[in-house]
Image: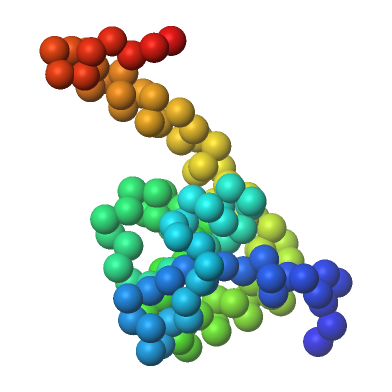
Length: 123
């Protein structure tokens, strides 16, 4: 099958997994990096400690997998259905956009509670 956009394969991002035998490694360090570029994310089963991963799964922008065959299954769907690929990527990016400034908000909340330790924040 010929794709309208042959680069669709390059827009699918599997993330590194602790199970290197069944899930391929990636150049990305965390799920927010590819999501910034509107890329859907595929990652292994150890993601429950990542709030962003859970949000992206709920929104349809990320796909957890258990084994290599799962990667193939979701990758094939993303490659064959360009609308699905685009929607998943935009869903992943929306999580990033909605969480911009989270570090500043966290520091502000902490500085109010622990002002003797943190001090005044600039700005």
